[in-house]
Image (cartoon, rainbow, N blue to C red; front, side, top):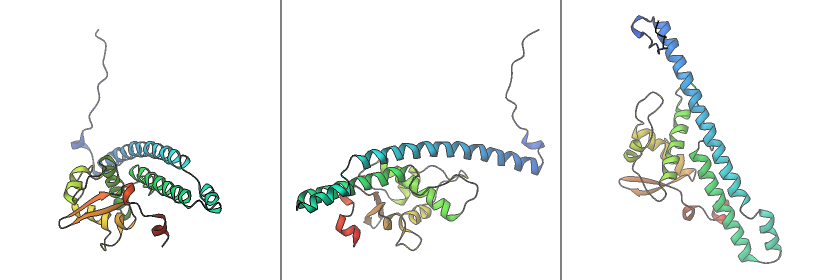
Length: 202
């Protein structure tokens, strides 16, 4: 008698009741959410390691104060410049991994959660393409589909970049810049575009 081999049994959706189908979809969504959360946590861990490496490699404010007490203004400015640069790079690394906003993979499609997810995905595109700028339509083609499988709309991309009122969002948070007004194009913030220490405190 030939040995039996195991086969994957495909669910018979046609014979399922509405409740059974709903339960099946819920379980599938839960499995996917757990997988996405695991991947997100791995990216967060990598981002935090990058942040620690960047932060520990730069002078501390204590060193800057020591130089200030000794009247070494050039050394003070160098320390501050390195601190700002490291903070900018660390923020970019954290944001690209989704750690900056603490985005959670959960059920629901609230506007805040959706905007947070899109913002993190845009940061990842900017991080992978330093110096490049994108229109909203370009970013739509670069971003992964939404959890429901549909493409992200250009309106949602613009809302994440500019905010619903056109004066907030990633640009206001210092995570992106508008490189062109008509048609609108955007890019990630580079080290050269990071605010100077004095400007950041005004």
